[in-house]
Image (cartoon, rainbow, N blue to C red; front, side, top):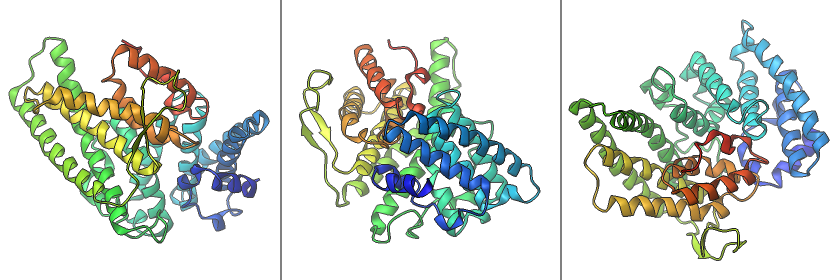
Length: 371
């Protein structure tokens, strides 16, 4: 079953999600075997519209989850590499399946973060353990961004910065991946992590202003400084990104001219590059809006905000295509939704209805009602 499902995954874009999985580790621990089997069966069942296979995957998922809970309470198994791998795979399962609710994956992501933190940075410095951390950085960062904990995000602490980046080791990249591409990928995630306190600060400021509460000027100034510095840093990242060799997006007619919200859309021949671009536009939306709320808007900020939002919406059809499409666009579309008008939000909701059939984490139930 694992071999069949693996072959199916290799034929789809989902293979990049778990290309770091060490097949030779299978057959030794029931926990890891169960986690791999559950996730692979779910993807295969969904890909082939096989409801029976999907149901079987959920049953195996339940057993694997019980095995994981037991391993985490064991005196030595809790820190085994196989335990961490199983925890990551079961989180991925929830992203796609949403067994209880669309945002159940958040509980898993928080648990993975806690487990990694308890294992310590040294445990993720090299080899398979390092690859596992690198593979789920985005999930951990996004989880903290939208569902923050009380303490500083652990990957943002100095002790973890040395293991948070691939840095050219090619642990989760093909051997022929140019080092410049790897550095741009690392840089994007670094910027994403730095964006979190700005997003939180902007939200607190906005809510205070709505309630007529005055925020201390020094706090507003500190937030404005963070946003200004990050805006400049992200602009430099964009320069590095655009210096790479990759196919640029082109304007094309939408696949369905009746259902589409736009006369032309952006076709990204590189889904990965398209996802990074959408993430950049979403990050810029957050920074532009934060500076507006701090009372120091950038020149032509309203035009810039509209441009970034439109670019994201026009990229949805292309970058959102395929099994991994909703995963690639999830962050950008969630941010963009806040900047869309009512008609656009209702259109986004219809797109989310299509995405969530196979990728539960993007369900519109986790979004505010349209304006």
